[in-house]
Image (cartoon, rainbow, N blue to C red; front, side, top):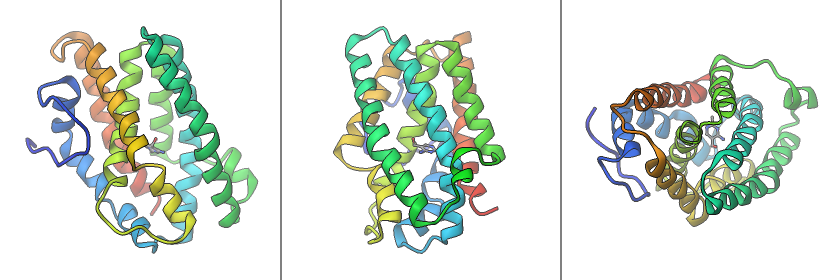
Length: 226
Ligand SMILES: Cc1ncc(CO)c(N)n1
């Protein structure tokens, strides 16, 4: 695929992130236009589907926080370290608050929020995050961060009316708007600043991870219906 969907970030088309975004357009766009996203905006997603998705995503969330901690620890930039730290504070307050409130609304048993059985996409995603966290390689960490946030920004910013109920609307509002756009732009700019040449050995390893993680994002939505 050689077409780039319209996106809400500023991008150098030939940059590391721009090139990989274009190479993975098929799975990326399938995720952004997924049935789950359509039903979330419409406010029609089945409560069981939403609960299954959020139970898995709470496990994603914990590994994601650990990965952000690794970004704090490994960044070569003091300014970037502060930006990651600020985001950790927001996630611990607003995003954890959304999960907690919505688990209560959906009457999800506590055991399911603590140690559910992982679906295959969750297992794979957590494994990628564990690998980059342990690698202490800032560029490798940024690859996973950029995909997770940029792909979610792309569906969150879809031009659709917002649903009324907090369990639907809250998840959308966490992934759209000026603050989330600015955060995503920061991640893309950091990756393009520190990424190795795409054709180098390190660059090829990062590209392989990029392709796999975008595929997992799509599978993650599918799993909520299985
Ligand atoms: C699976 C998945 N990808 C990305 C995000 C956004 O960080 C999320 N919450 N869950």
